[in-house]
Image (cartoon, rainbow, N blue to C red; front, side, top):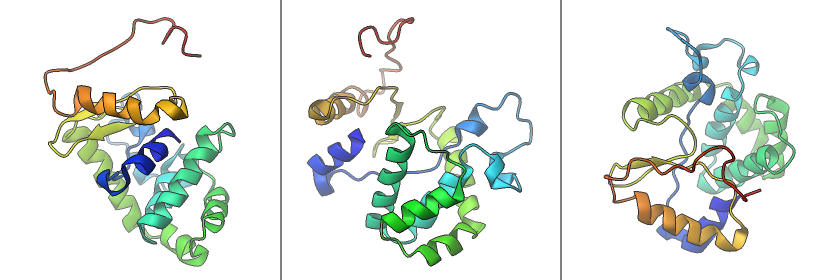
Length: 188
């Protein structure tokens, strides 16, 4: 994925702290007291299990998580549209990435991970105003949502630099949007 290329370029100078955000929760029409993370059967949700799997991978260290997360993103967005509520898929990816699969499966059953997901989502919406993914939260507390197609690999780093230049320290820029339809003309 394109941010992986950006991370390769910046190395340790760029710290990506992936947090949880539920599009199913934020897009629920009149959710009332309903919360996706309170569902009893996680497989009935669109992506809660993927968040749980990501948190389980985090317990095996940043390198393991990064491998797992990139593999999951690739499975989802690399053309296959892998489902985000299939535990067997997450176990398969964990195995392919060299994670301790037994620990991974055990951690996926730990309800503390669901608490982390709920806390992340609540903080994203209530503190940072997030409404979609990806929303970037900068060290200075500024946040910005980025809607984009995957840039060409050779433009990934420049695209990220321009994004940072526009939004990281410029709180007076609230939104940049291309007229629709089509969005964006000539991009695909």
